[in-house]
Image 1 (tube, rainbow, N blue to C red):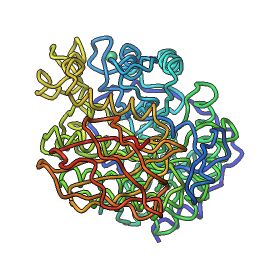
Image 2 (image 1 turned 180 degrees about the vertical axis):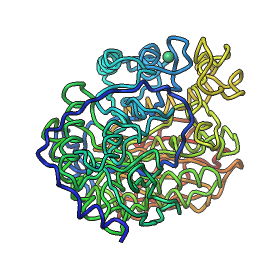
Image 3 (image 1 turned 45 degrees about the vertical axis):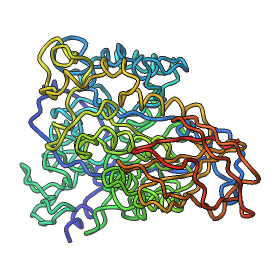
Length: 570
Ligand code: CA
């Protein structure tokens, strides 16, 4: 019953000229609101650009890869990145200042994380510190700077071949958005831009929360929170408006794509609140629209649910790429437990479910407790987790601060604290007073310190990203899961053309001697010299079986504790 009401309404005011008076109230950027953010984007296949790479194995011959498959992405919360003007809020000018940290534009890994893409959490005006409740889709948050500042950032990123995608919050606006304020008036043309009911339908949402909220003139639907009323996508005016928003950012501003927030929840059907048929149809239409504007644009979806549901967005040509929440959980589980099976099994599922390469592995994001906190502040486990991530097929995403081992547990503000640049006051984040306290561990844990230490987590991330950037097999190669007799040993083969790489991680803090590796069927033929690209040692030659795999292969007598190797088979 719940959502039936708004079906009957809709489309009453179609041809009223939509004059959007955007009287933007200045956002004060306070941190008074925080809400459960829970959803993820998906991706679609497309007719595109990217030259297909010749791939050797059956099943992958028609694989299509795109520019995003060649890159490691980095998620940035602008408010917490770097404050350039001392007001305590990170800003676009701060990101420009630290561009070299992201990517110098040179292949050298020095001072250079080497990321090829950034995802910015919402940059729109918003009354909340996090920005997921938008009050104007055609402007930027004044806390972050001006649109001109943003365009300067975009230009400089593009000069270094760093792509920029922005968080796009389609499902809901802020309750302070002028559209919603207008819609409180039952006679307003904006009434049907939102979902109103005269009585309270009383529906309970996915987290047991109330999804109907009392407004001035009835009850309105908002799946996440009363401050975030859902837009009514049954109303064609809303669809057209949001299509125009996407056009504006792609064409007039020049971003490279979008991370679609809460993509499961755009269109409800009766009591079904997520992943409805109507929702799938919506994304099919939206992606067609986006590709018409820019065939290269990336639509990445936050579809935070089981991969069985996620894959439908990819198969249906609705999204280009989707975050792989299941794989994120499995990578973290294996890094924490020291057992490889969760990561290997889940990777196997993802390889079966998704179009080749069109899933985005990560460890944690801005909605989850930070990697280092989940791993008990164990640096070795953090390096193991990073190795699983950065050698994985798909498009890896790093959450800012993860690369220096920042800690953070809920509430949300505490997992979104300022990036720790140095041991100076407020971690070098601001010369003023930061919008939220910096983690107290910044004197020992910061970018400056770790940049100078070749053994640091930051250097480790830099080295692995650089390696991935240089080796096609790691980016778009086929993946073979290798069986080991030791539960702690994670091993995969990545293969592209003639390039054959073997990744081996001993997830345990103990040396492992009895770990024979086997691959039943594979792409190999003959005998190979085994040469390390990452890690050091003298490795045993490998001879393949008739089936192109290998049997009971031990590249070293003993794998050291937390060993991480990337070996090339020549
Ligand atoms: Ca600032």
